Image (tube, rainbow, N blue to C red; front, side, top):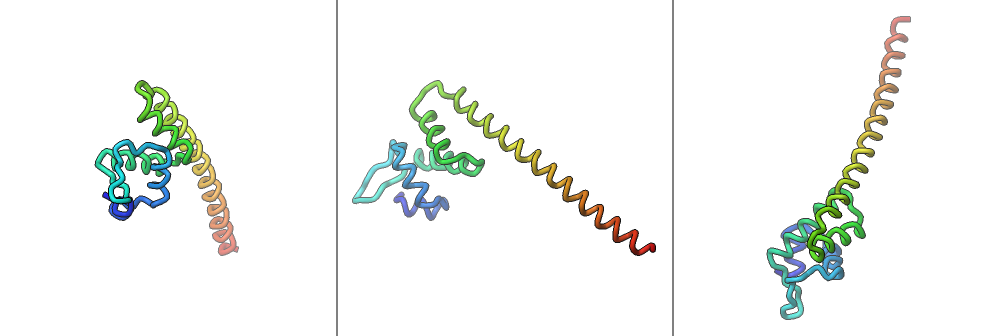
Amino acid sequence: MTIHEASERYNIPLDVLHEYERWGLCGAVKKVMGAWQYDDTDLERLSMIMTLHDIGFETSEIENYMKLLLEQEDSGDRRLHMLEQKRRTLLDDIHFREKQISKVDYLRYQIRNNEKNKNII
């Protein structure tokens, strides 16, 4: 499958595919008649890259994670640590957003309560 076919079929932006190639992670990718050919293993790796991107990893973090995954045997602890850090960051963001929602709800309550009291007078 060519880079354009992979991009269209799996809805992966071309810049992500080019980045993947620049990282040198295309172990099984072969150049045939001037076009890169992706096999199932490459598509699985791309899926992992897209998942990491979707959960908020920065490009440099994705590159580091993938290099650990592909180049270092016992890297599970380091990759797990990266995922745990991201999870903590996401939870912190969720808690911050929950506090914001509570403040919005309080302001809504105040407005509604004031409107109610106006109608009584």
